[in-house]
Every structure is written in C-alpha cells, then in structure tokens.
Amino acid sequence: MSGKTLYDKIWDAHVVSENDGEAILYIDLHLIHEVTTPQAFAGLRAAGRKVRRPDRTLAVADHNIPTEGQALGVDAVKDEEARLQLKTLARNVADNGIEFFPMGDIRNGIVHVVGPEQGRTQPGMTIVCGDSHTSTHGAFGALAHGIGTSEVEHVLATQTLRQKKAKNMLVRVDGQLAPGVTGKDVALAVIGEIGTAGGTGYVIEFAGEAVRGLSMEGRMTLCNLTIEGGAKAGLVAPDEKTFEYIQGKPAAPKGAAWEMALSHWKTFFTDEDAVFDRTVVIDGSALVPMVTWGTSPEDVIPVTGTVPDPESFATPDKRAAAHRALDYMGLTAGQPIAEARIDRVFIGSCTNSRIEDMRAAAAVVQEAFLHGRLVAPHVKAMVVPGSGLVKEQAEAEGLDAIFKAAGFDWREPGCSMCLAMNPDKLQPGERCASTSNRNFEGRQGRAGRTHLVSPAMAAAAAIAGHLVDVRALLSETAQ
Ligand SMILES: CC(C)[C@H](C(=O)O)[C@@H](O)C(=O)O
Ligand code: SF4
Image (tube, rainbow, N blue to C red):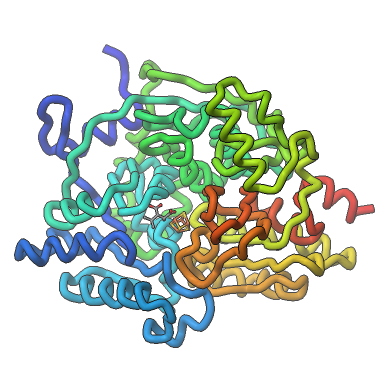
C-alpha cells in the first residue's frame, strides 16, 4: 500500500465515523464573523441548543466595519444592517461564552489574520469558518476551508462537519523566486495555470523549493488564493518556520505542552511514496510579478505583458467572457498592461495585510520617497493593516510614517475595500491596484475595476500612477 499525503493524514486523524464515502469530521477550530453567523445562532436558539465547544470557537468583527473611528464603537456604524449584524454577534458570543475581539479591540482584525496571529491556527488541525478564504490557514499544515451558514450551525451545535473526501493534487513550485516576485505572484501564476475550476474536487498541497522559501506570510497568501483556483483547501507541510511563527503566540502551547505539540506536528507531512491524483509543476525561478487584466482571478498576465486578444481564446465561451471583461475593465487588446492608469490603490485584505506585506509595500514607498517621489497626485491610496496588532507592530517600526509621508491613507483594520460591504468602496469606473483576492465585477464597488497585484506592486503603482513593474520603478529611482 502506498503512503499517505498530508491531507490523508489530517483527514484520518479527524474521522469520527464514515459511511458510504461520507464522513463526520471532528473540527478543532471554528472561526466566526458577523456576516455568516446570525442565522446559524438563530437556528441554534430555536432548537434550544448551546454552542458545543465555545473554547474551540473564536469570533471577530471584520467584514462590515468602517476602517476609521472604530473607538467610537458599534453605535457609530452608519449602515443599519451592519450595525445589527455586529450587535447580534456580540449578543450571540456573550450568550455562549465564546471569545470575541470586538471592533476597536487591538486583537480584532480580519478573521484569517487573527487566527494565526493568536496562535489558534496550528498544524494538523481541522479549521472551518463561514468564509471562503479559510483556506489561508492551510499554510500551517491545517485542513482549513469555508463552510455555509447551515454548516456553521452544525459545527456550533456538534463541533463536527459532514464531509466527502477530496482528491489529492500536488502543486510543486521549483527553484528560487527572483527578487520582486512574491507569494502573491506565485498564487496568481498557479491560478493562471490551472484556471479557476482547475482545483475543483481537490485539496492542493503546495511543495517545492520556492514554497519552502516563502515566509509564513507568503504561504498564507498562497493558500488564501487556493479557493480562487477552485480547490477545497490548500496545504503547506509544517516546518521550522511554521513552528517558529507559532511559538510564543498567545494560544500556543507552552512548556512541556509545547514539546508534545511539536512532536505531534512533525508527523504531518506527505510520505515519500504517497500518490497524488494530479501533479502540476511550475518553474518558480521563471516567474515575474503578475497582474490581473480581467474580471476573474485566472485572467492573469506578467506585468511585462500585454492585454490578451479575446479572439485568441480557445472556446466561444472564453472569447465572449474576455470581450466582456475588456469592456468592463476599459482595456484594449494588445495594450501593455503597465500603461493602465489607476485611480486608487488598496493595500490590505486577508491575502496581503500582514506585517510582512506592510514591510514590503513600505520598502518600495521609502525607496521612492528617498528619490523625491510621492503617491501620484491623481491617485488615492490606502493601507489597511489586517489586525490591530499588525497596525501596532507597523507603527512601532515606523511604517505608518513612511506611508503617510508619501501620501497614503493609514487606516484601522478590517476587510475594507476588499469587498464593497463597508464604507470603503471604489466609485464607478475607478481603476484600482489591489492586493486582495477577487477582481469580480462590482467586487470593490459598483462598476469598479480591480487589478490584483502584490503589496510591492500596489505600492509601486501608487507612486507611478499606473500599473508598473515594481522592479522597473525601483531601478528607475535608483538612477
Ligand atoms: C462575506 C463572506 C461570506 C465572503 C466569503 O465567504 O468569502 C467574503 O469574505 C468574501 O471574501 O467574499
Ligand atoms: S478580506 Fe476580503 S477575502 Fe478576506 S475575508 Fe474579508 S472580504 Fe473575504
């Protein structure tokens, strides 16, 4: 018999019962936020039940909160529905004894930033949340994925989830990434390669020298975008970087428990003789910074490239979609993408709002600033740290001062302009270089135009006033 993959091992360790290819999985960590939980708690209440494991549940307020004036509290939130959702969450967690970081608490932030930051996310765990980008936590070698609201209710009530096992896919990224190429670029390149449906039915394990070379932040970015490739979840096997990241975090095991946890975590890797159902190999050393040109994350090209001709696509459906995307995006086939003039820059979201992302963007801004360059006069640029703790750390390092001096808006944590569910939105027709993960029509505001890029690329675009190869901007300022 062949060996097991990392996914097989986590799965096997959590099966409570299995019947006809369907299993009941034990859930180690349930993350919750204000948008996808009100009905679940209402259902629980109607059934006269309480949350089964409040100690394995953690709540944040992130999607619909404003990114300024958070100290004023929920009553200051202008949108009525948002205010109601936030108050409902506060009541539900209080009724059930669940740990909650409310808006304004320094530990609050985007759910997928907070879990790892608190040390709640650990290798070998099963982690769910009523949120598609739960795949982020797979960076720690945890089986993590989004669930629907009825499943949220099921997990609240039972701490288990009904699941069918997915197939195993290996995405191996070989070689070393060139300077200026980041986890975000790898993630976009993978989606460009497999397409948004390429991962359907699979759990993807990322391996190879380039993946091992990524920091935990980079791995989180990579796993975050796995869902945009259609996969159930993304995984990176834990290693010394993983353990180092977790050590000392508030919820990390301490003392003898740390040693026990370590030896348990070290069992979570794919056996040499394990067999994957599909393997994709990418040459990491050949990658360049990526940017999306259309309205799907698979519409991706190197920043050095040109907008594709819709007629070059293979099927009538793809051709029609590309025509529509170019029309929506206000772009012309054959145009160098780096010529597209932008109106807005958004550095934030659960994809790219961690301290390393802040540092990468600030480094570009500082370099340009030293050569007398600021945010281009026609661009409105904002930086939104992923949590209060990221914000605090960035401020301790003086990153906020760099951003502000160059003309960026420095905001309070939340999902912000990643999705148009709070006051941070694009105006119709505005073009934005964004570090988030979705470029769908209307995603950042009605008729808004989104180009997905890395933090360094977003910072460079803010300075240049158009999409630009960050490497070109930096070599230009160095002269
Ligand atoms: C609001 C929430 C359900 C949604 C998700 O599941 O992903 C959001 O986080 C998003 O990114 O679109
Ligand atoms: S930052 Fe964006 S992608 Fe992430 S959870 Fe919030 S809305 Fe979803």
